[in-house]
Image (cartoon, rainbow, N blue to C red; front, side, top):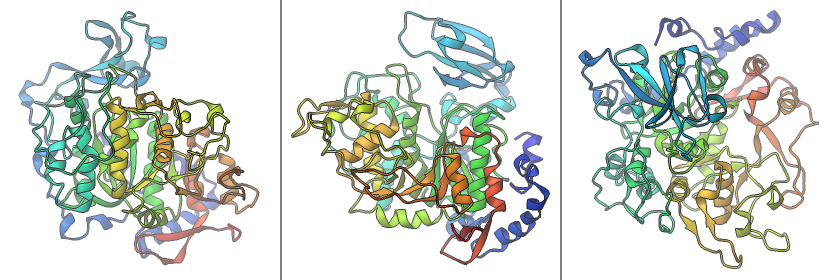
Length: 560
């Protein structure tokens, strides 16, 4: 990374502008807090607990997983690298071209990030329905070229992926969690199911699979006309370690390629010093301040920001994966949320969006998640949504599978959930099943008792919609209380220990008032630069007891 990143490798609190804006009286509390964080029983701030022990000794990852095999003497000429799909943002150190093969318009990317859209850049190919994207001309051997996602480099230039269909199948018999992951991935890797007919040039070579793994989760319907082809599907099940994060990967992951407990995040292109880059920094800081667990970020973009520093954030691991192809049919970027949980290889996980950060006490959710999601209940658990009126009147092609003509919805087993899942390896086959149904364009037949309820899964537009419909389809019954407060007013209510807040009730599922508790903050974009992490740091103290892995925290107000 550039020298600017090295210059920031100090304590994540002390070096952040938001903290410098805190009144002097509050700053006096920070040294005491840092002492407590570093000397507490769980080492909550910069603990390298995941690096302890023989199984996590540094240097065990093979060099070909992080080294580029290209001939560096061939540098000096530019390569066109996929940068962003339509409606996404492209940050490029050189020239950008926008369109499709044979129909390009070019512009200078050095003027700043570009929004790749017809509205901003015009339409170089109006006769084509979809597939427009931005590509970036990157000079081989340059600093930017070495920071490129290995997932987007030509096969001859890329390192070896740490996750791919072949290794998932080969390790399926090593452990219960590896078996569950292969069950989740088998339908995407071609071990079972109907032929896929679509295609996309960003696929990967299809490996030979033995087909001896476990059966694919869920009944496999015939692939539809907008299914991705097998080569592309297999390419979507690959992940690479960012070379800068090799040591962090070796500390956090076991030699079997798994993490016991971790937060999982998915993210696309983040313009350096842009809104998402700043939000991601606060996410990194909050995890390192208020948790003792690692954070696995699966990056689906071209260039990660240089200030994502593995030394400043020693429990951060950065993986890279291919973006979802859009040539045949638009699929929401948020379906990468399903892929991230499969590619991260986490036994017990909490999904965090990029506009979230965690609060003191969040590690308690790992134990609760592990207790509730098991062989008898192999599905993710989501918190209730703060909106009470998500129903047929709000629209959605899935409602006929759960609702009658009289307006009642006996097939809806729970209140609408917010798409912030917690999961264990037992839930991976369920996630793989519903991801497969989308990517293979599968159609669910009419549901018994619900006429005209056939559902083309690809027509479910967003990840949250499919999470809810899928859970109801499989008769799920577990939800979390609201632990991811969604509004600035809730943040201050809970921080100040007031009792005048709360999530809106639900006359059907929760007729009594709902409980809410603050372990995670979402929708931070509503107030840029408010310094909530710093306020939380200054307003909390650790209790005198700890659990197995994390110090428990409470706000200073005794009413909280």
